[in-house]
Amino acid sequence: MDARLQRRVQRYGWDKAAGCYEQYWADQLAPAQDRVLALAALQPGDRVLDVACGTGLVTVRAAEAVGRTGRVLATDLSGLMVERLRDTVAARGLTQVGVQQCDAEALPIDDADFDAALCALGLMYVADPVVALRHMYRALDPPGRVVIAVWGARARCGWAEVFPIVERRVASEVCPLFFQLGTGDTLAHELGRVAFTDVHIERIATTLRYDSGDAACGAAFAGGPVALAYSRFDPGTRAAVHEEYLASIAQFRSGPGYDIPGEFVVARGWRR
Image 1 (cartoon, rainbow, N blue to C red):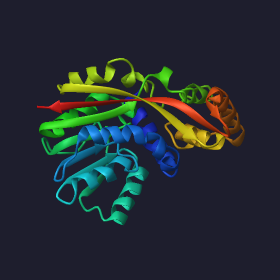
Image 2 (cartoon, rainbow, N blue to C red; image 1 turned 60 degrees about the horizontal axis):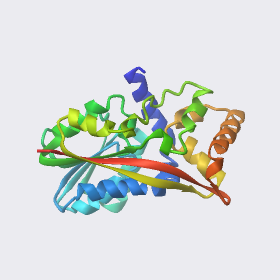
Image 3 (tube, rainbow, N blue to C red; image 1 turned 30 degrees about the horizontal axis):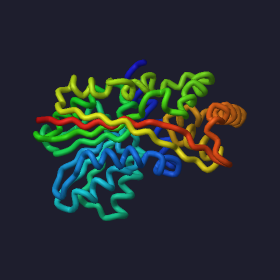
């Protein structure tokens, strides 16, 4: 896939999802975000880079951890995600947080300017993850740590059929290698390629709870990575993809809702 096309798809796709992202994903992503912050072990005064920050679910917690003597720079490719985070930062008076719209593969940052770099469930969407990791590496002041979370193996993510369901209607070009980083030792290998050391990997089995079919479909289509393609579907096509997706997760039905299995992979590495 052409890298420039992928970046455009990601930018405008997440603009589409920004308005309902937290509604459908805040609780479901919390186990991965909790572990990212635990492994980062942020302290008052730390300088933190949060890459692919989205609406700031990790950013805000990082800012609280580092306090007024610390500093957080949050970056995201989506302009509307960044706008939402700026509103949140202003409303909470988090003067230690800066927010910038930019590409993870071209971070406009100084070398050795941060104690920790975080990327919670964003690296899968980057056209060249190794380039993004190199930017995070150069951002760190030794000894600095990076903590990354990605989705795990496709077979362990019960919602994964959303991609082929959309692709059968339109070439969405969302992220052809979405599950690759969470498969086997891929994430550890990529961190090693960038020269991170003492790499620690954890796999976290999780359950995505949705109280209704409408909520499950909202998360899969309107609030997630296929939002751009979904926004172009007519009502009949939307009804068809909802029906097909609910059939794909029928085995996870729990009363009126769904308990969909998933897996996160969380890694920590060091620049010594």
